[in-house]
Length: 420
Image 1 (tube, rainbow, N blue to C red):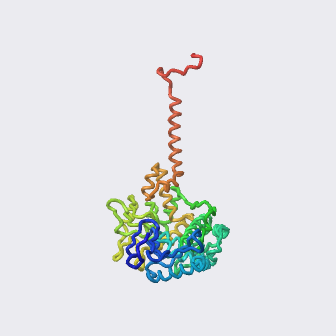
Image 2: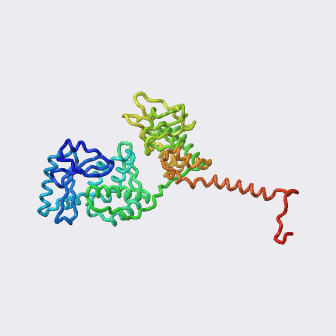
Image 3: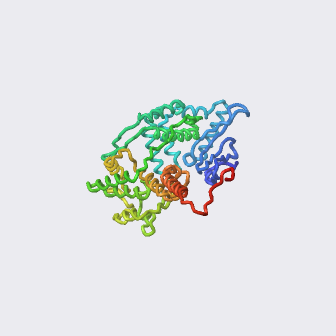
């Protein structure tokens, strides 16, 4: 689409359509503004090396805002003139970019490739990049990484080659785990990073494509009533021994609501509706959501004292954020309960399992947990076996009772084939 001479004013006037397209300059053939579906704009130049039957080459000159329209025009002129003399600017640029390391591309990805990701997801991505990807592949040039390198990377992470217990600050630690689940999820992230590299013309293919990943079984644990009792007793003992009351309260709320840790730890008083029995979250992993809460959760929240100057239900002891020490309390509780590998998120799974054992429908459980898609809740379907078996048992007993009913005069025996 041509819009006359490209200037700052005309570039500012371009509106996104929800699809990628290019507005071409009306004076300089091959010079244009590429507009992505996200709304970002960049100056580009296109040319051919050879005749009309040769493929078009495209070069990104720079992002709108980082380079002025007239400066971009001068660069486009130079690129197009050099192409007429046989110099392939795009190939030269790609070769230079291929010298960049995967570590460099990861840093670029975190800045420019994660616009639509939630902060919690971005934090997880950063952890996988720093703890797994950079140590094993970070020094490799982006152009030399091939599919066998990805497969070797996956095996190494699964084998625990990057596992570590790292001190992060005065009283903090980061426990980096390996395993097949971690390996599968990190390779998935690598696939996204290489797709980003392809979109930025940093390489022509994605080496992750075609790699067969391990089944991502997330090691979910569903606590029985007896196991929940052990956790409750260990938590009570920890409180009696001086465990942080905010951490204990967060753990109880996670068990009593099925909510995610971030939803409770970062809960604000403005989101708490005790009168109606709801938590009305402004944001979560799945966006804004409403969590219904029962009497035990309401009692916990009613007994929490609000701190002046903070809207957080569980504010940090220092600073302006929310409480961050739940994991520290949880590690002591799970060890005392006899479940050293139990995750806080497993309390969410256990909440679902208790509901299904009661006979509650998957749709009801999904609504409480805030699942946007019933398919997400269906992962718990196998937990409904107990009520199903119970129903089968009761039905079979009813049929058996009918078989042994005393015959009366109204019951006519079934005749045999001879009519006797």
